[in-house]
Length: 257
Image 1 (cartoon, rainbow, N blue to C red):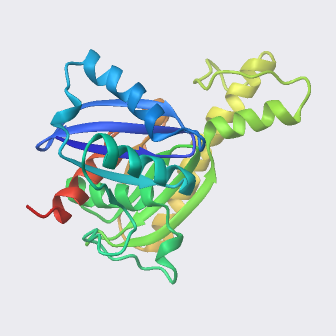
Image 2 (tube, helix red, strand yellow):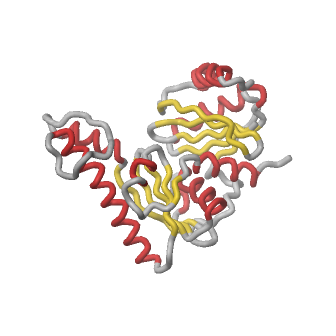
């Protein structure tokens, strides 16, 4: 089985693939101080609960936007799964797409992984919206090549910033309010975040399509994708497993039997 690891700023996702089937995945909060031993204690217990033997893992791949997380994750794979993990972005790893930017190394590994999966599964041209710590909009052409995109503050990050900067504003859940006009502080904040992001999504996608000059599909991924999908027609596809699918595709392309 393949262990695919997606290390983001907020969470790290560990996913098990058996062939082309996603068998299970687990999520842990990101921490630059967590060691390989700590990862293994946590992961072993969860794998055992679901009936998976760690010895069944024969390969691993890592995509990370947190440089400090890379070494302990590599050590985890080397020490406990007896394999050298592929690392997205390292020289020699073939993504199967071109990065049409002056400095390709500036692009986060997760955004490239999403581009690989989106092209493989859905074709292009396409705008990929990822609701993560940041809300990103990535543009791929009909060949799957990466053309850049847009980075905006994430939904939860914006909500937290609002709470931290204004003494009387509480923390609130991100959800669709019953009305646009809030009848109190909480509903007003929820309306501002929710409908503000709907406006952000629709406005940016419309401008990207106009600038690109061709029809484009729109795909959304990330935990909040279904919430926003229900309130706008601009999102055509929702795939919350996009990153893990991309990691499997990259591993399959680069593995040496």
